[in-house]
Image (cartoon, rainbow, N blue to C red; front, top):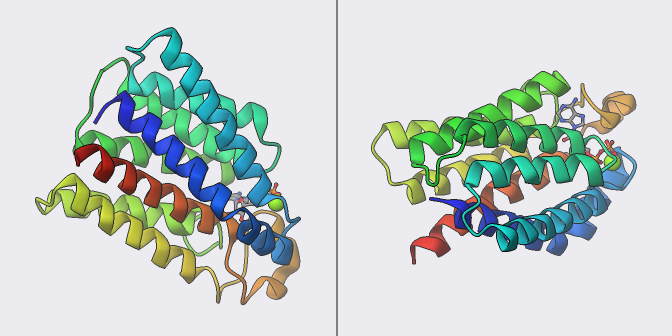
Length: 215
Ligand code: ADP
Ligand code: MG
């Protein structure tokens, strides 16, 4: 995996959050302020543009640098909670890769683990608080576990994407303890968390990007 993997991942995220924009808006309208679909769409549109410019200027841009640029772009274009959270996640993930030109599955786990750590650090949410952590943490754990068991990166990412989707659904019956939805108290029960939903799209996008690249 290399810079092209990261560029393709960001394009896949952009396409999927755009396709699911109205759904993400509806989910956020139910327990937040209804901007999550537009936040994610605006942010990843800007990320794709920024990465395109960076790769035009320097086709040898390393993958870590692209992730850091993606994170910076999210922070500067997205006002809601998801901008700083995903922004610091991608920057932390990018820092793990330094200037290296390619990375393997074990390093991908470290990238995503750093991203998760940074989300938890900034947002102080744990699994069960009804946030994006409910999708991201099981995805990172499943990726690590499958790779440790000797699975290919593609199979491990399929497991990670499925784990994120299960984590997303697990937010429905629980009460929000972090973010805007927590203001609703018990009334947040019965609704799927928008951030966990877009996080499942982000992990599924990574799985697709790697599968397409290896074809
Ligand atoms: P805002 O809540 O500022 O309008 P968004 O609508 O873009 O921002 O994003 C909302 C999502 O952000 C929530 O569904 C939740 O998953 C995530 N989120 C909010 N606060 C936190 C937090 N403290 N830690 C982790 N994720 C959070
Ligand atoms: Mg919102």
